[in-house]
Amino acid sequence: MKKIIPFVILLLFFAACKKPKVKDIQTNNSVDSLTYQPKVPGSRWTYTRTILLNNTNYNYERLATDTVHLGNTYNVFYSDVDGAQYLRQDGDKYYNVLTASTNKPPLLVLDASKNINESWVGGVNGSDTYTYTIKEKIPIFVLDGFTFKNVIKVYQTRTTTSGSTTLAGDTYYAQGVGMIKTEGTVSGIPVTIKLIYLDLK
Image 1 (cartoon, one colour):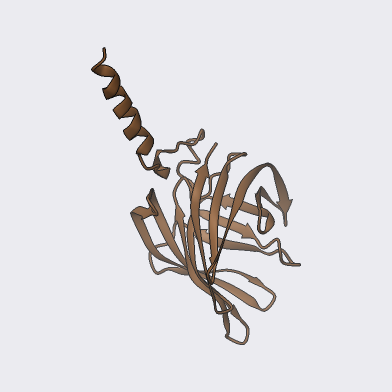
Image 2 (cartoon, one colour):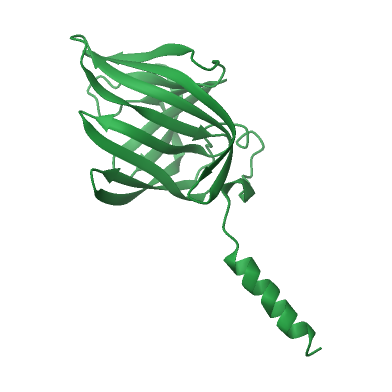
């Protein structure tokens, strides 16, 4: 018995030191494991955002409410940074409402059915046009020690009627997880957002 105890302690030590992997986290909804935006209420994502050299963390949580906007039902999420957010999935298409805008237009931010290098206009807000392109479909993607599966990399631009590009960058979406990383520029300022914690219900 004395020989077994140290062995058990050693096993517990290595188990505690094992790096967590997002792919090991299961949802309680088989449909959510295939979606690019889990929607079970109470699920929470924590991101770190870097603007220039300044880092801040914020939470993004699925609330237990839905809302109707322009005749469509949207799931309500809450961000510490942007407040209430409205998202809707229609098959392989994912829409996000620009709640900070006066017009609150829906944007088609992801079309998972598109092939690599295919583009689409996600929407128009005033003089701004949002365009998206599928750049990569990655079976296995590792980010800061976390392993993700079936990741889609989307390139996004926001251009004005005068032709100026005020936003450009890549966003990575992982199946069963949602957005895991964004890197680009907003009005010429570099911005990076990365997922650092995930609690799926």
